[in-house]
Structures are given as C-alpha cells and as structure tokens.
Length: 249
Image 1 (cartoon, rainbow, N blue to C red):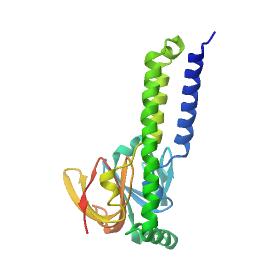
Image 2 (image 1 turned 90 degrees about the vertical axis):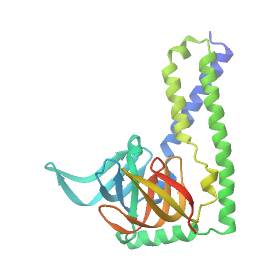
Image 3 (image 1 turned 180 degrees about the horizontal axis):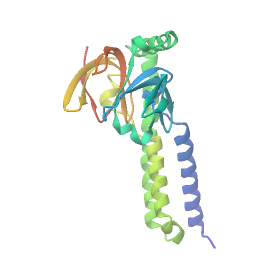
Image 4 (image 1 turned 120 degrees about the vertical axis):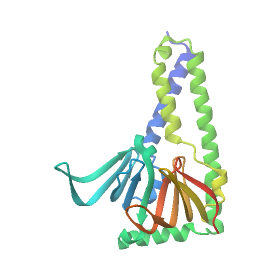
C-alpha cells in the first residue's frame, strides 16, 4: 500500500510534468515572434542561406519561399529549422526593402514603442522583470526539489523511472527558461554596439536594442552587410555569436 509520502511525490511529479508540457506547447521566443509573417533571411553558421516568410512555432521555424526552388530535382517551397538547430543560427535578417506595406506599418509601430520608451512603458517592463525574477527563482527551487525527491526517495518505482524524472526536470527548466539580464536591461530602447562573430571575423554593428532572451538578441535599424546583400535591416542574432559591448549613443 502506498504511503502518504510516495503519493505526494507522484502527485508532485505529475503536476510538474503537466505544467512543463503546457508551457512548452504555448511558449515561443519573444525575439523570434517579432519577425513572424515577415520576409526573413536565415544566415546559419553552415553558410547555406535561406530566405522566406517566417512562421514561428514552439518547436522551430519555417521559411516559406515566395518562389518555388528546384534542388536535386526536388521542388521546394519551404525550409524548416527545428528548435534543436537554433544553436546554428548566426543571424536572422529582416531587410526593410523586402517588407510588404502591412509589415512596414507593423514594424513602424514596433520601433515607435521601442526607441526611447516613455515612463509607462519602462514601468511596465520593470514590473514584468519582477515577475521574471520570481519565475526564475521558482524554476530553481523546483529543479532542486525534483533532484532531492529523486535522491531521497526509497520507492523502487521512482528509482526505476530515474531517466524519466531527469527528462521531465530538464524539460521544465528548459521550457520556462531564464532570460533576465541586468547588464542588457538598461540598454533596452537605446542604440548599442555589438560584436558579431562571423566565421573567422568579428564584425561590429550598431542598432537599437529591441529585446533579448536566453538564446537571442534583437536589434533594429542596423546597417547590415553580408555576402548576399547590404542594406538597412532588423536582425536577431544568436547569443553564442553576438555580444553587446556597450551604449552607442
């Protein structure tokens, strides 16, 4: 017969797994969401560039080509990049001259809200950051509790399901994520300069810091250049390759 401790343990794991599954289903990166339904160029570290109208899902990205492509005698109309491949993203580039009129209007609203935000927008962001800090603390405590339950439990069921418990713990932490960065927070809405690692080179760019997450940094109004094109653009760069170095105004 199950004792009370075992029942509470099983209930805790079940509830945590349910919360993780729900968060994982609805969560999408805030930077990536800003480029939803826009014409975007993907610059991966592999060097194979793709351009298309971006669709953002919690499991990855899809680039829908405006024109069909023939490659290896296969007709291709889109390209999918899965979430596990995000580490290969060097940059996502939204060139202004490739946007539709509707996209341009939406972008103009974004930059109006972003550049030198007023008192109420700063207050709103500070409030959200308080909740982010609390959330990060909850995640850390939950992670510790799951590890403690696994180590101290005498149940053969939990012991035999150790791999599942570990996976559930990693899924929970990974789904919620931690993104609050005090060093970057004070630069939101201001021009900053960044170093972007491109192969063997380190290139400097200046732009308005729109947003950042655990994986990406988003800049607006950047004079961007690549092997394919040069022009004014908004960019999202992987934090593995892009480093904010300071204020640029």
